[in-house]
Length: 616
Image (tube, rainbow, N blue to C red; front, side, top):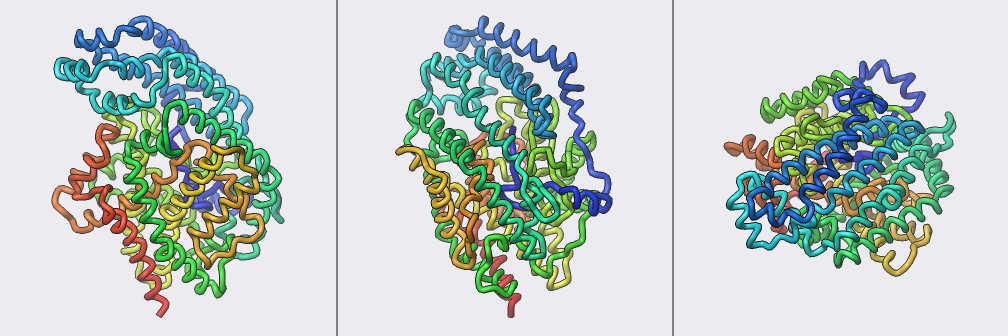
């Protein structure tokens, strides 16, 4: 499931509890619900049962037809035909997997849904085992023979970007039987530990004065104007995390070791190399990003939180005050229809084409906005498959940050729709560019709101909130990446105790957030709830990559260079068919240039500069 879990970036983008539903639901208006019938009518439907059976049968037939014959197919101009068949199977199984995953995300505590999700994963794993040979065998075709096949077979030439990407993995490819073993054991290995983490997090309850609450609604209180409520919520989080610390340490250690085994067998040197390969980005580019952000810690987060402490009349912010609202922050709820209009208006300003794609995501209930205690936390956009459409999940609470989350996830949806024309195999965008449309959508929405603001205090609140969001997206995500690096590097020498994990967490947080924040007792456990550490190791730098990229891209947009919109949509529509260097070149941008990252970070600095100037 493609997830952009905004609870990682914005800890308070969250689900509303019973109190919030009672007091604020009517103010939010009629929130849309998902309609999964576009995928399948029900989990016990004949259509789904038929497709599950067809997936298994077709996968076995595909193996019989093509296994051991791909080199010959290349010489006979039939490899393109084989890839077309493989893509059709990928589309079918992707539809089934999407339905099961979305249904489960809607209520992760429901036993029937959990069993259905597990059973579907099992059946798809069994079916896809018959397809493992395909990529492995393509990668054994000689380079010269493959070049001849590209020249002779137009159907194959269409898939060249996918084949070229596939062949980048050749140095890390294992013998067929080992690959099959790795594949089949995912269900009882990494996937099982992921599911244990998800279901545990969903079940956690945090004791608060007005009753027990779930994770997201408790995190939401960290943005409450009342400092006593924020402190109480932080203490409740720490208490429950501590009670489950051994389990989370075990999950983290197990998955880190699982990754180390896989990396060692495949021949990856650095702990993050497999992620860089999957993202189709050079390690040196990521290293340049990381170093640029680390160097900017004092100019960004350290400086901003010192400012915020003064605004709140404190020498230091407690860790539960980091996301506290300023007194100037508007507290009125933003209804769903108003939020939708704000975002669509901002999107429509870029071009009618983008503004036209966005409304369609909600036309047939493709967005789920209500906050429910048992659904997956945070927010995400799931691309499903090109023959269907994306689904967006929100836990909409009516706060300004929720509007930004709507803009973010809608951007993912637009990106996925535009890239869908590339087909199932080539529509997926590498994570380094997957945040482009989403963060650009946020920036459009923010600038649209800011331009309409005439009140100085309100402008200050908006700029401060944007600075915090960008710090959370850039500084915080790079800090997460550094935390992961230390954990995975130390795990190579043995298990890490929960206490050691907490020490690493605190070291990185102090370095990244600066001396203006006091990390009180209990904060050493807050690494436990970050889902990306579990689901997608080293995913987090993609947020920083995307934010800095969009800052640079937005500067080009502001200069109103001719043809920007056409180039922008071409970049989104390319999906996974081009390298980041090819996609950025038309805008005069180069991620390998240190100045690229400096320019992106300068945008955050300028916002903090303006906030400092407003103090006088």
